[in-house]
Amino acid sequence: MARSTKEASVYLQSNSAMAALMPALARLSSLQKACKASLPSMFETCEILQFESGQLVMSAPNAALAARLKQLLPRLQDRLQKDGWQVNSIRIKVQVGKIAAPPPVPKRVLELPSTAVTSFAELSTALEDTPRNQALKDAIDAMVRRRTART
Image (cartoon, rainbow, N blue to C red):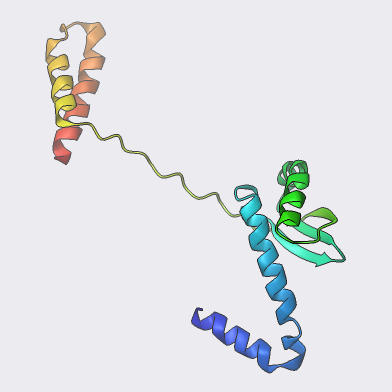
């Protein structure tokens, strides 16, 4: 555990009023993990607010996500029941707050073998010098320069 997490749990366990919250916090945390495992992409910005008497209350940051999540509730409820959670109903509350930006998609770099770069260079020299081909030749030459500069 991280230092701040240890300090928080030590504090909660030392105070009798707060120690009573520990089982509920652990239960909500494990339920949050189970929901995230069931709907990983949808559940990034959602949170578990309450779970009492078989009724699960979740938050969504906006109405659009809440509507999409509502369509997946039967699947989520079935998955949670298979995992041992006694979920009889699920409610969604829209709570506008901080919306986490989606993680950036890693930029895919196409690696060309040296033979391919050589072939493009040969293509550029083989093309006729006409106004129609000039833009293509310039683009191929620029790509060949970039690829040869990397190696």
